[in-house]
Length: 411
Image 1 (spheres, rainbow, N blue to C red):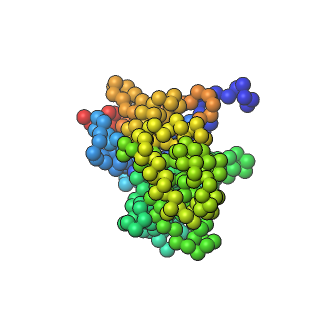
Image 2 (cartoon, rainbow, N blue to C red; image 1 turned 90 degrees about the vertical axis):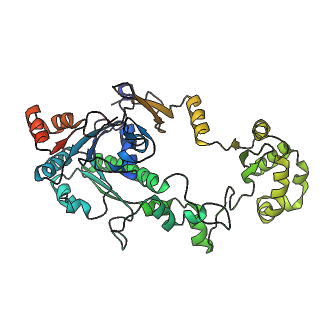
């Protein structure tokens, strides 16, 4: 297909079927990425539904805001896999999928009757992605894990917060989100590999592994220099002019003056050109060595003006700077940016909800996002399209409570 024939409204993963067996956050975040990229994602839920549908405190028409934030553009089918017929139905859906994503604890899939190796042997093109706390192998494989558990075990919490204070959890669920992102990357790589070699892959994503990978240069410092990295607050271990400051109105801003040109611009914008002649601050290494002397001088300078009044002078002098926004302020900025990062999802009954949009842009029209599904609302369509079941067979499955459907969320 040449560029002129590309359909920019369908998404690059259009035509791929993803069966989503996940709950809560890491898995649903992964499959939402795939849905945003155009894949057909069917969320296979238990009769009671994904437990994140009921997380308090915020709800829209009975559905948790937590659930609504990570399940757009999906369809839902609810099957009782405790019944033999329900398990068989799930296995048939797996046989029609390109990708299965699950975040069971290792061993649970087999206990409920989904034997991964047998399924992959029967369907060699199938890509099976498992997300778990500690991976499918290793001494901790059967332990439960949540976001804060892997933030603690990975060292991430030890780096978060202020020096000489108790460790702090990151304000975002990085343990879940990063695992979901790595799973989506792996799935896309496996799909590309399958196009070349015709075989699926078994993907093993550990939340802890992903957090360790996100340590970045801090892990290298520990491995190479034998140091124990400490919390930095709103500062940087290596660059003393990469930090936050309080301005005259009490509001905070951050500057990231990490080059000599930026250091000069910072001093000139602050009216502190005399610091350029101080030998203690002659280069990056000197400024780092004498940071305890440098910081009070910069802090005093910033107190001379309100935070917003520093933005233009610092930009003019080539210094990256930003006010520290709260979440509503950041979302309003996103609305005004024109980049589609706050989107409204409309439900057929007239209600709507705003969520953060897809950050992946391809320079053309993006696929429209749809409202997250009510429990089992797409079951009849999925069974017809994937398995060719007619309405009488679907009605029988409903009657046997193998298939559950809630067409609208409870009010």
